[in-house]
Image (cartoon, rainbow, N blue to C red; front, side, top):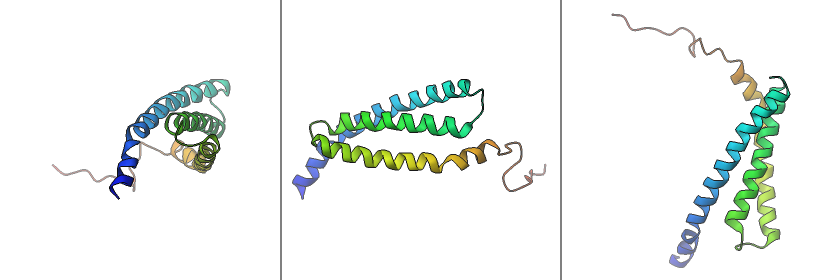
Length: 122
């Protein structure tokens, strides 16, 4: 048991570094690309901006993570299968969150959740 546990922990710095670097790069790209799409669509088509920027940045995230973490550990075929499965899940989530983006956009933030807010008496 100890040998298996130590083999897993040997890869921890690689996982952490790969995750953080891929996240930093892909999220920066996502924000930049979303704003480019916003300008190109004249602030219209939120669903398109949301999905295109997310799907593209998640492809970047998946590729960066796979290269950093799995390079030299798995053969190319296994790494591709892992990356494709991970990316397919990310695309599903990106498509699934679209209605919630519109819901959040139309949420009246000036009104408290649950109706009227009871203020304390002085």
